[in-house]
Image (cartoon, rainbow, N blue to C red; front, side, top):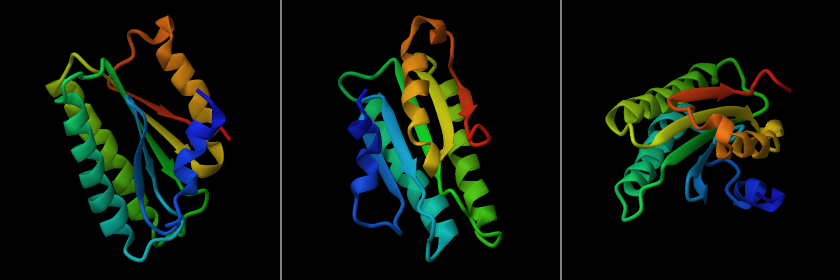
Length: 148
C-alpha cells in the first residue's frame, strides 16, 4: 500500500467533520476531528451510523470480503470535556465490530486504534494482517495509541 492511499482521508476539506472513508475494499477509516461542535453527536452517533451502514453494504454485497479492518483515528489532543465522547465513540466501534464478528464469522474482523500522528503505522498493521501469520486474527483490537 502506498503512502498516498493511507493519507487519502486527510485531504478532505471539512476538518471539523467526522470522516468515514473506505480506503481499500477491506479497510474503513473513521477519522475523528480534533474539534467538534457536538462531540457526542458527531463522534458517536454520526460516525457509527455511517460506519455500520458501509460495513453492512460491504459484507452483504456481491463479493463479501474475507477480512475487514476498521481503523479509528483519534485526534492527537482531546480536551477533558470531550474525552467521554471520544471514549464512547471508540467503544461503540469496538462493540459493534465484535458483534459483527459473532454474527458474520466468515469474515475476519479487526479494529485498529491510533492517533492522527500515527497514521503511518496503519500501513505496517495492514501488511501484518495481509500476511499468513495473521490468518488466525479475528475479532481483535490492535491498540497503537500508546505506541508513539
